[in-house]
Image (tube, rainbow, N blue to C red; front, top):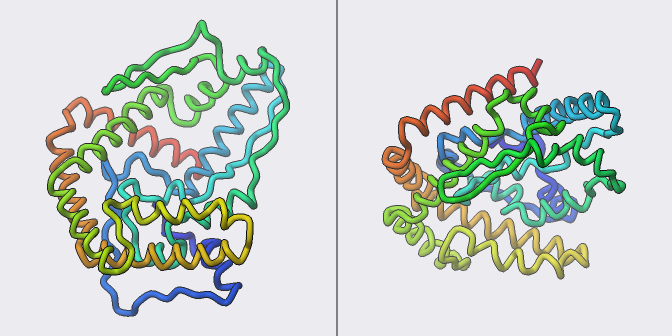
Length: 297
């Protein structure tokens, strides 16, 4: 989801190195497998792009709120790069695994060092200026029965229309919904399950058994609350996480998991996506590209 870590080693690798721990990759391994994502990754944003767009949107919200006589302080982007970089299928590269594991300890360290901004109680008028009123609320029904509601007269909606274009409030949920449907369908396909079974057998042989791509992460996540109370225990968890993730990435490479997922996804999208879906995706991509071009100016 980026030029992997923008030339910087993730915080987890840095803190382990500072503690005298290191993780090395095997030399001469094959190039990293493709980063497979639904709809060719159209709904994914790099962390750099996400921050630029966030900042532009916050400036637009601030201007809108000021024009309405309301005080508003632009909120900084506090999310880490992991949200953009994490593969929705759980696919890993050896490089990422060696540097950041699954991102469990690294994300905890990021959140610990970047507390969310505090906010004070707001009046009803302030909240309505920001998010809009009931009278201007719109309900968008998505395939599968999910409803998305938003008000068109709030400063957030106005700012998003300014940054992404007037169709964004419809295009984004529709396209994300399509991506989620593709992902869910892929994970139900027999060919996908067979590929995961091959990966699972490899993981069992490596000493990290797991029936699916989230299973190896579960025991590490379970250890985090206790490990967070002691820096030495937290570093030990970080080492174990990198070891497990590196084994995971090796098994994915050795079993050709990413390539298998790509093949299944290609067939699912061919069958699932309609002509109208393709038009929606194309409009979303155009709106996204226009927003990124404007943010880069």
